[in-house]
Length: 65
Image (cartoon, rainbow, N blue to C red; front, side, top):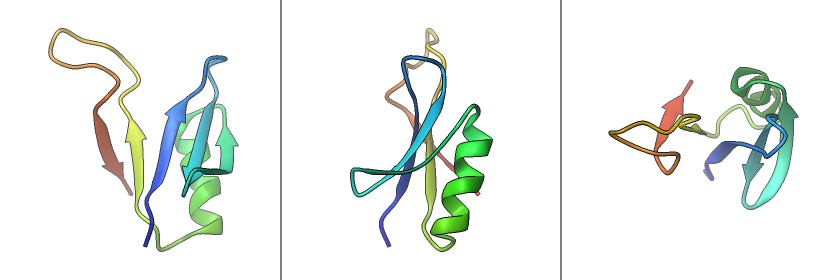
């Protein structure tokens, strides 16, 4: 099962990709995740951290269900 990656775009929207191809978009991570899960219900979704902090940056990923 390939992962679905949800990343924030330059305009503030979110894009869900699977195998390098866009499978869904949304105005929030949750919306992009829900749309991607409808198309690929068994694939795990990983969301990008959407803020930079002293402890970490956007290169961190977290699994969302």
